[in-house]
Amino acid sequence: MKLEICDITKQYKDKRAVDHVSLTLTPGIWGLLGANGAGKTTLMRMIAGIQKPTSGCVRYDGIEIGTLKESYRDVFGYLPQEFGFYPGFHVWEYLEYIAALKGLGKAETKKKIEALLEMLSLQEVRKKQISKLSGGMKRRVGIAQAMLNDPEVLILDEPTSGLDPGERVRFRNLLSEFARGRIVLISTHIVSDVEYIATCNAIMKEGRIIATGETEKLVREVDGKVWNAQIDPRELAAFEQRVPILNVYNKEDGDLQVRYLADTAVIPGSIKTEPRMEDLYLWLFPEHAREEEVI
Image (cartoon, rainbow, N blue to C red; front, side, top):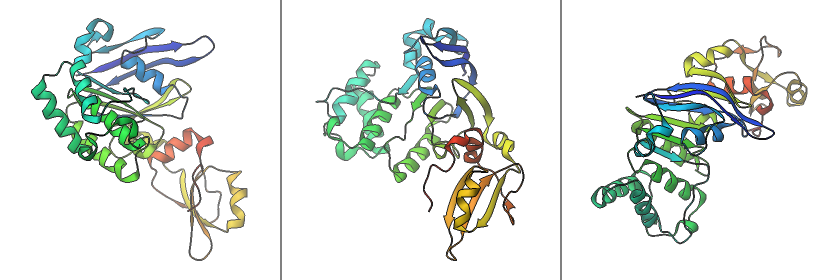
């Protein structure tokens, strides 16, 4: 099983959203990381066959998806950033409708919906209108519809948007189980969504894939560049002008514990620490460093 993105480009009038991207996906969980506006959604829409590329193609097991048509959709599941539904639909009713579109029989549909409602903790809202659900609940319904046909290829665009921390953990565990023998591609700008479950990651910036590979290999790029240090709170602003600050923690003695990125130590007493995927991401996207609050 193999999904190949072959030198794909999407050109709009005044912008190239995806710029000559090539990627070969094999079974396992793949993370597609990048800031908002990097081109991730456009790329995923082309993989899903919803948008046509300006040039290049997508192949599934060696055959272009445009040629496969219905046979590709039979093995494919897709969660867009915003999925559509009729306002009056109840959860069960909506999933039945999607199952019918995917060609599932009545008995199989009932069995699949029951299983997914349980897996995604949606049993209590099965008879509720989707329009009246919380953002997190709606997202879970969207995940359920993507998984209804037991797809060989599952494409999820920002799947944890609107989920609370507990829901994120349960979702990651569910995906880890589901991904066995399947290709799962998760687009996100939240590193923790994929850091511990992705087999491989591709990092996208300004329409291009700038890094790809297994997580352990990717983070080697920042090996020896991640530091921990203790500083006076009054020094923080000055250090932020010199290096990307990853995390800041208040210590009981009033000082700050900072984690920062640099080729060499810039704060006296700095100690090298093991790099993580988040460190690599912020090395490649320094403009996003220190977006979170001091804790």
